[in-house]
Image (cartoon, rainbow over all chains, first blue to last red; front, side, top):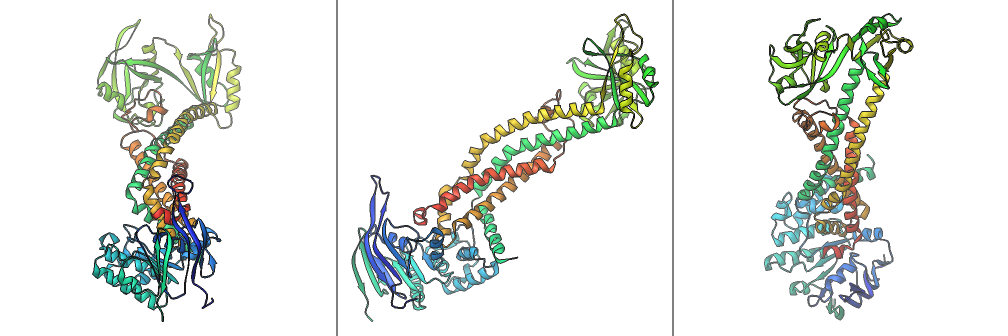
Length: 232
Length: 401
């Protein structure tokens, strides 16, 4: 691993939805950016500006129409689907609204990604307990996510994102639709994750999160309109 | 257990989650499977049960059945042929019997009167009320419990005008009632002495057929000897009466052909129903497709490979199939046992009502049960695998939108 090399790099990245139809629209147009290992990167911009699309492409959840995403030296567009899934195991996702498997306990949801890795149920439960304690929700270990509030759900989502000890955490609007207190708790967690050495990339409008950024990008209408880095 | 096997089992166990997380989808799919499999399992159960009983009847019956043959048709045999055949080397017993249809009661219920010498009743016939007719008696009959119930007959009841012929009207007396559900074809039987049956049909000195028992190993020799007889009894004005001999093997072959024919028709109808049911099951296993897409996308986004998702889906299908097939088999047992095969028994046994009212012989063998399970699995797995494959092949970002 080269400490000086970019951890994430996009080169002329574009994504067109419904290509070839009358509904075709460009969600991302020629976006080129780099994020260093250990950064707290924030993507801002108006709704529909391309933030979620950028996170999906960087997280190997989607394929670009053109351009490249280089993740830790690997071109995500040039590898097989199985290799992309393996790459995703190095990335923790905090999705908008934190979708969960309804009916399963919080600990099962948090550790579901570990099942294909052959981790035993006992070890998974112990890991979930550790992570739910870390996000302040140890009491919800056996509760189904349906009983959680929005803020609690987002924190369970963060615990799930951390379950595989990822190199990169992607968070899409993690504090939107949360009250200030819940949003602060989530912000604090992301700050702690970053402080532990994990690279964080957040799409947000929240000024509190933007204030934590070591590097900031602004997207508008799919185009990168500004970038700035905090010195020091 | 090796790590990959343990991992595979761990993934397969999540199939239970998949079934549990979508109770409506699971319940509807299982219900569809049961609706399709139940008649199939029940029908085959009856078919096998009948076959068992028929095999027993043949096994405990005679070695040879002798009838007369004229103009290419079976005709009665003169009783004097009994001693003629008994004299053949290797014959151990000859029992004449008269078998003919009679109509009873105001509704002209069809029944079969069997006249046999005293002591000639089938070993499976058990008297539940009264007694057997006395050997050589006239006018004494023994009826099946089911028939007695339908006609309101008790021991001592008279049946007028049971028969009317040149000798005038005669009344028969019920002297006994036998259990009429084992075997099933005894349900509409009436047993009487040979003399009573002769009187009923007004044809003395004749038997419908002769049941011949042979010494072990002599069956073929006896069969050939009977066929070589110049005439069964004394030749009459129509000339000699030739013999037609049916062996136990012939009966077994006839039985197999008959049952297999009915089973074949039943299987064909079932396959047609199953083929029509496939789209239904495909639709039901695809219920909540958008839920399945989102769930699959979430799994893929969190590091599940496509093949791991398919294993999970396969395990879910396996669980649903086992549940569907097991419920179908349990319900088939209840249908054939407690409900006495209403609607299905008459498919396999001519003359039986749709609601037979008597216990139906059935045997649920492992092969139809296994077949039911395999068919369920194939159909359910096809439906859910296609849906899962499509969901797993889509971009997780698209599926989660």
